Length: 193
Image (cartoon, rainbow, N blue to C red):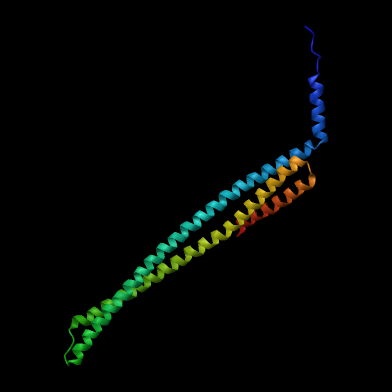
């Protein structure tokens, strides 16, 4: 049986490694590293964007519940106002008939006035709490927008990194890095707002 020609695989491997180095092996490793960093930042920014949006929605839901409670208090206030008006009319009827109004009418009017004052105070407190929750939710949504923009820019930077790796074009990688840095800037800024 004839022997097959022996191929020196060590020399072949060295030749391939040299070609990779010539063709941009260092560039490929750098692209891989920056793309990995951008991917990690994008993952964190995505989590923060989702978390801040969820928290803002929960706060808006709480604000809506508080508004419903405040509306109930204002309805109670109006009901007591109507009862006070009816009681006042009854009292005025007694006076029109030149008779003294029963003492319990004055006590009832005083009770209705106190109930109205309490309802008004409670409704205003609920509205203040509602406004605070709504403002906090708006603030969270403002930060969410920066996280979302960061994710978008980082994803484009990652895509450009892949194109740079395939084409071995340094200019495309530089574009990827620039977009990634802008995305990282949005990511950092989102923590500041």
